[in-house]
Amino acid sequence: MTVNPYLPQSAKIISVKPQTAVDYTFIMESEIKPTSGQFVEVSLPKVGECPISVSDFGEGWFEMTIRRVGKVTNVLHQLKVGDVIFVRGPYGNGFLMDKYRGKEVVVAAGGTGLAPVKSMLNRSREYGGLTLLAGFKSPADVLFPDQLKMWEQDFNVILTVDRGDDNWHGNVGLITQYVKSLQLAKPDEVEVIVVGPPLMMKFTVQEFLGLGVPEKNITVSFERKMCCGIGKCGHCKIDDTYVCLEGPVFNYTRAKGLID
Image (cartoon, rainbow, N blue to C red; front, side):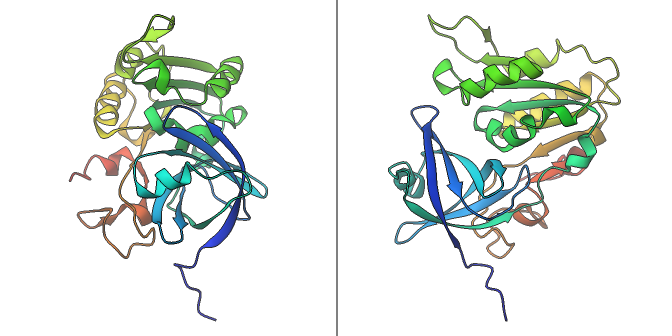
């Protein structure tokens, strides 16, 4: 029997949690089995379809943290527990988890870039050591505040915002300035993961290279318009590379040559 790669499955919403004014976390009842760094195509009949990163997963469920930015996500934010949506996937290569086991790992995440690595951070005991650098525009934009407090009990967390307010007593400034302050005992053995807006990733990677981290030890994840998820539409293509098929996770030795 021919398998239709465009055929979605139904998935029931079992939890909705607002993170910020425009970011909601949805937990879905589903049998799909993603890995860290993969994405799914979410569809609503008569509305449309869009790619969404998987932010966590377990047996019989997966989680997405969705920013309200357009037609489909605007409607998604109006849904409630018990409602049903449709998903295809998971798609993309995801992170090579075996590469990080037992090693010192540094994750630098900007804004919604924290969502694709959340499941990795929840498995911190698999690494030899873990540091999270998480940056947001303002205190109102901070994702997963409860999870950040829990993570602080398990590993080194550096949380910073570009602009504080009267109630903010934490770090202020870009992630790049906190990369410089990291004390890496053996930078040539550290594994680095960078996820976020393109400019944030560009300058954050440069800071890690300046600390002596080899290019081959740096992994990035691209955010592209991955409309079909199966290498057919070409919207995510950079030169000859289909990001939806060969990415969105790339070693920096290859990613540095992927330029629009």
